[in-house]
Amino acid sequence: LYGAYYVSRVEDVCVVDDVSAVEGEEYDLEEFEGYSMEKDELESVVGSPWKLRLRLADEEGRGMQIHCRMSEDYLDIRKGMNVVGILLSTSREFVKLAAMTDFCVLDAVGGPVWVGDYPYLDKDKFLRTLGENGIADSLVDIIYDDNDYYEEEEEEEEEEE
Image (cartoon, rainbow, N blue to C red; front, top):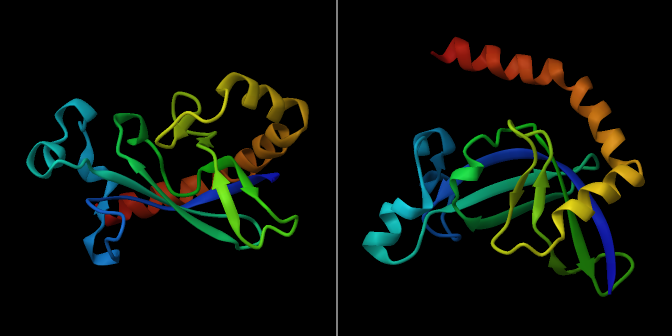
């Protein structure tokens, strides 16, 4: 089994009632302000909880879409935030994925947010390793370089209001 870091950026974040939901059946994350897993209305009615849909893309344009149970921890995730996870494959070329870990949204408000249904990674060790091998430093540079990106997003949101 081969492993590799998947360093990416949030291209889109939304909420769906089912992982097979199409684009018109997605809900803006902002609509879930005040959401809590304990009081998930969908789960109380139909027996399955809301799901977070996170679309990611790396700097080479390779995209990935992941789903996991919705959590109040995810409410501050925004488009453009930097994300790191580990992908596993049976081939060195990663033609087909065998598995993936939980993903860490590094620049979320209040510190890293872990996205995934299971805690596959030892979070502290993963973050330490990112720091030791320089990935964290390169992402910090990207985050600071992207301040203009966030300011543009905020300006667009203000204009829409």
